[in-house]
Amino acid sequence: MLRWPSRARSAIRKLFEQLQDIDVYVEDVNDEAFYRSLLDFATGKKIKIARVFALGNKSEVIRVARAHDHRARRALFIIDGDLEWVRGDPVPAVVGLHRHAAYCVENLLLCEKAVVALLSQEIAVTEAEAATRFGYKSWQDSITMPLCELFSAFATSQVFVPSFATVSRGVGVMCSERLAPRRSELDQNKVATMRQAALREAESASSKADVVAELRRVTVRVNSLPDPLAAVSGKDFLLPLLCFKLQSLGCRIKRASLRIRLACAGEASRFSSLAEALESAARGHQ
Image 1: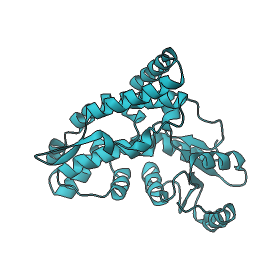
Image 2: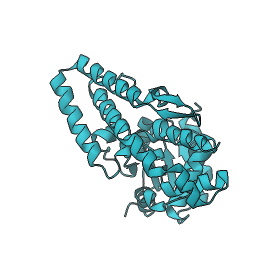
Image 3: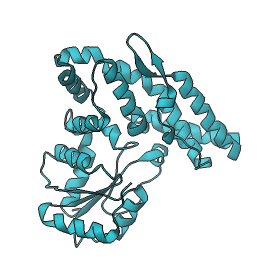
Image 4: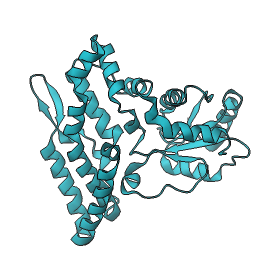
């Protein structure tokens, strides 16, 4: 992963200073174009952004945010929620820091209207036909319970065994191939096996009573969310599953294109919190 040294980042930022109303910093390298498209759509291009700056990871975004002088230059620092958000851990109290109210930014992309429009365009059918073929609500319902239970377990195990691999495993190892038509689908038995493994690992490092209590607390929080799937990694689980579903319907769009297409379509209201944070930062957090 390419990482610019601090001196180079400062020089690049200075080059774009006159071209934008505010500097925006994000975690992942190679996400600059995606975030620029997303922010333009979220705000209706009311805030001028010529370049988004990637710092490489969450810790670096928070570190730079803590040191930033907002009197000298207006800025917004954006981070994902991750398992800390799933557990309900507080966001660091740093001026200009915005944490997505979801596992990650990809969760915000999921929108039936955007998915249907994309499928309609890709396989050349009406949006009504695309909606029928995809069956968004049925698809969503089929993955919600097993994945929310899994991520409640992941968030619990991280408390007791931070080194245990959770989200990094990806969803592919928890899918099975189906025939007629050929497609990959979430295998609930494999998901349950992974959930049990995460909890066993936690219990090996603490008492079963403590693990059960934490799991119960996290599960109640996840189930109380307006959209429980917000607690599931959009990047490593939900978007791959969406891709599998689209592929089974004859849509061959690549993941990188899918993200930008979803970010620029559908209901802009799903990005309202991000848009409000950007507009507030552009006003100097007034």
